Image 1: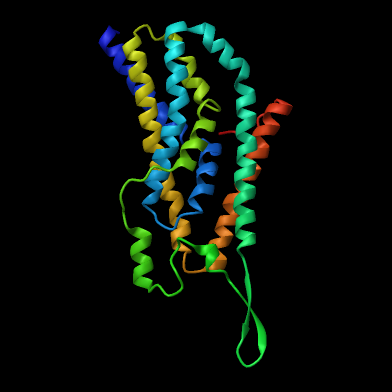
Image 2 (image 1 turned 45 degrees about the vertical axis):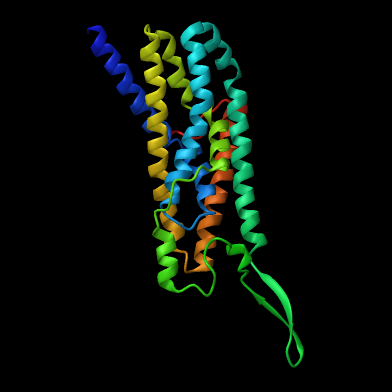
Length: 254
């Protein structure tokens, strides 16, 4: 295999690894907890792209260092990788618990009216659905807001979560190949295409994840149930990630 063919194979591999990497279970459930805050399918593109950008930032930095210093830095990274992965588990539990808590806290809204006689009204809180459309919105208005493409928006929360995920999980497989790449420019291209694949894949994944929340937007009980499922799954995956490290077993097979 000549140099050009080998470099092309490396670049294609980087892109394919990026596409696959975004679909790791811990990545998907983390982003699903962010999607619960949205009621627009296409905003998932910007959530996923922002997550991918955050995920790529530490990988690009560390990857460039490994390309220069090779196995010296890679060995040090592999030594601390379990601690980084444990941190991801903690974050997943926190994200899941936050989603469930916020849904529970906004479940009912109580206030007192004084018409002819004082009485208390208890109903679903409109405040809890801020950003999801008011009760006075017509069905067509809500439909348009759910599917409006909108302009690209950088999501800070998604970016930060992506950074936490960046150096954990199957990213180690991608980094482990860097010392075997002889050409620095090919290695840089490998990193860039891995990042591009990750951003693209997660953007698609988040659009798909947004569908259940948009589809159940008109049914508060069902919508919140979907949100609770996302939160619980995040917490469960987080506990599983931490358990794998502490017990040295494989709980999540994918």
